[in-house]
Structure formats: structure tokens, C-alpha cells
Image 1 (cartoon, helix red, strand yellow):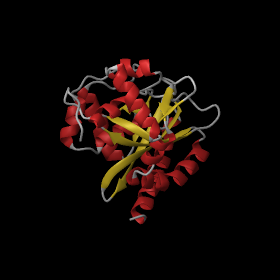
Image 2: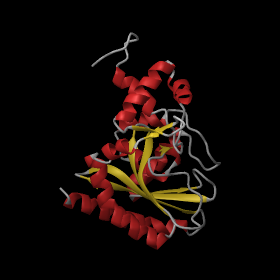
Image 3: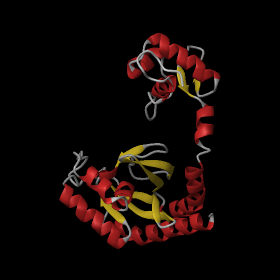
Image 4: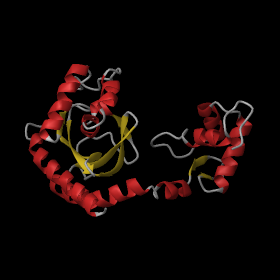
Length: 249
């Protein structure tokens, strides 16, 4: 693979350009990309031209740039994510029809939970997640479910790291988080009232495949005294996705 004088491969630099786009953004200029990547403007211009030729980026009449449909097409072929989403989607739709709030499917990616799918409803409670969005593990029900079933060494790495408190209820102390993870493993679900927003409660349960947790199914509902009633429903829904995954081979 060709390398630049700095030792970086061309592919590495192209990845830097693609990953410069942040959640919720659409169009950026070459100047924006140059600033965010730290690459020379000529390098960014050349990479933008080449990536646009392949459909990974798109340019408009003012030469602004956005992520291309071709990039989404290739990413959508990821077999593990695709089969997981296909298995979960009917269950998510049924769950959303019952709860009439936000229903979500998340997977572990690094030290964050990455959301593959989210369904919502008019007048639903505030929610910070979106498709392809991320949240820290300690502050979300999906994240805590995934963390609770991860390797012990990884758990400790996450637990001892600094944690941001989004509300007064957000757990940040390692000992408190250890107790929460133990409860999740014991009960089979996570109940997180006000962890990310004081007005919302997250509830999640693990999805298994071949004995390993591969995802978390969750809802975000109003933070009221009756919110916890959805825990059994989440456990049943997650178990249904598990059966569908196992049936898919």
C-alpha cells in the first residue's frame, strides 16, 4: 500500500477524511475537512476528488462535500449487523407499538454503545440517541447491559476510567457501577432512571447469539414511578430476538 512521506498510508488519510464528518452534519467544505484532519489542503482536495469518483463522497454545485450513498451501501452489507437488525426489526416494531416511546437496538463498539436502529413516536420523551449514534456505556441502559456481559478485564478498564455525570442520577463511581452490573446480570435487564436525562428512563435487556451477548434491546420512556413495569416486556422481547438469531443459524 502506498505511503506518504510522513509514513501514513493513503488509505489511512482517506479514512481520516471520511471520519471527519460528525453526527448530524451533512455538507462540509474542503477547508472544514482540512482543519479537522490536519492534512494539507492539496491532500484533502485530492482525496475528496478520488473518494467522490467512487461514490464514497458527494459534492454539490458549491463544491461542498458530504458522505456518499455508496459508502452507506457498502456499510449496509456488513453481515453481522445486517442479520442482527433483520432479526430484531419485527420485535422492535411490536415493542414500539406497545410502549409508544423510543425502542432501540445497540451494540458494543469500543467503549461506547453504537445504535443500529431506533424507532420512535410522536410526543415521545426526550432521547439523545439516533441511528449510527453513540453513547457512553456508563450512562445508558444499553451500554450498561453490554458492559455487564463483557470480559472482566474490559469491564475494569471501563470502570476505572473517568465518567461524565449528565444528571445527578448518572452513576460515575466504580463501586456503584460494579453493583449495577451485578444487578443486571442477576435480573437480566437494566433499569436506568434519569441517567442521561432527568425526564427519561432507559430500560434494556441483552440479546444473545451462541451464548454470547451481541446486542442490547432498549426503550426510553418517561421517568415516572411506573416506568419499571416495562422490564419484563424488555426481557421477553430480547429473548425473542435471541431465538430469531439462533434460528437464522
